[in-house]
Image (tube, rainbow, N blue to C red; front, side):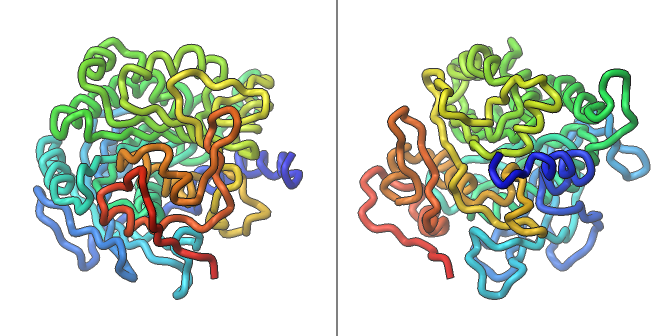
Length: 410
């Protein structure tokens, strides 16, 4: 295994799950700060400023007791959360430096009010043909972590459109009391069950978004175990009926913790008619998916864990992010599990700048941060990344890019 990190991945999964799925511990969210907003309008999003304020639209089916979000299902709730996202250094390469994510406020909204405000933000986005990105988080992720992750993703990817998150009732930590036959994996299976049980709620959110902004302006991305939830949702008859005649702009399966054979045989064919574009992001050195393969699933490989012998199904755009640029976690790159999406700059630039902006796949080569292998998969390079604001200002990138603004490593 790369850097002999298997034992470390076990520690990260069982003792420090926040390190595995996110970039650090959750912050308590309190009302306040200096950034105000009205119920029907989002605060302005400043991508280039030194301390930008990011809004994240939140759909959650977590139960709420006395103001605390629980690890069980409840009625669908709608929130808008604001964050101030700043680099930890004053002279960063913004794609690769660690980011400090601080909450500045929260507002509870009715469903109609949230959808109206989200539509207003989408219509005001500077990029032509902007889309809303709905992110579905993974295992052992609290609501606070899920929304912080979305805010960091948006900042690191330089995304100027609306960022939303579906926060399902995953456990906030990756450990719980063992159950018979599941000495180390009980928490995993509890989260897996909670993901499957949330499919109806995610289907409702998709219906609301499609009805508000149109399917062709919606991109859904799922990370890790969130793909189990997404797969169950896409297989539903009501979702199939909703999207077959009016497909989503794109579906992104990011590091999916889904059985590889099942993903190829069932998930991709089920999803293919429902989106104009299906994109799979994965890596050869994802230690969390390797752990899931061997510790949890008896050696059955996960869809996001790539290998030289994998054959890809038709209609799937494959992106290998193994060699891409990543912001080091707080313990340094030696301890990275190569799984946390919020730190993976190359994946986020591609997700927002190519997929969400509906740019042709070939632009990856034109922009110089990916190449294509003999099997047709895109391979991320350890190369400077395109300047995302430059891309956003042009409303996406055309196939015939002739001049590229890049941000170089210091």
